[in-house]
Length: 281
Image (tube, rainbow, N blue to C red):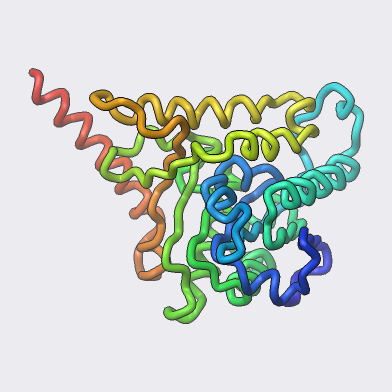
């Protein structure tokens, strides 16, 4: 599997690269170091301590330019990026990933549809892994780099032969909760299992936490809130939930317009709100 020269590959259990990639059943593709642990924990937990299921991870960008404070406030972009790569490697080891590939692209490249290299690397990985499930950022995310990575990944999957495309593709929440989806549109991902594993994974990323962003608390708080506010009329069956948007149709049918498909979720929310108001007028 040949990737761009900046790519960093880590295989926690030391297997040969072809085996580590081909055994992958659940693949997360995120923009930044820590995105997988926050958005694709469902896949990580599904595969943890399993020999028949394996989670593989891809980080598209180089990790430069993030907020920094405390001991990291005077670090250069290069120093911070190098440490973020090390943090992601540690998280992959804690989470027993099959592999993690950090592609090292500048954010501007993954946001640019004319830059072929990110899409080509993603296609190479997808062809080698042939995962059953892929976790992406959702295309309604408010972070432009997250949206760019999702678009490049969708393009890569659409370019695969039809019989080699993933059976399930999910757009997950990070920089915008998916609480606004109608209940009918929510893909419910239970993530109550192994809370100690979730805490350990979230806590690996000290450059972000000590650097000024308490993502470790915020992510767990969102999952708890999702579970509590999921159903107003029933006791909670799960302590933590994540929402996802079903992006599978966009991969199975490349003729679908991504923007129109995404705005369809907004249109259904608008209709749901309107119906609730009219019912009580």
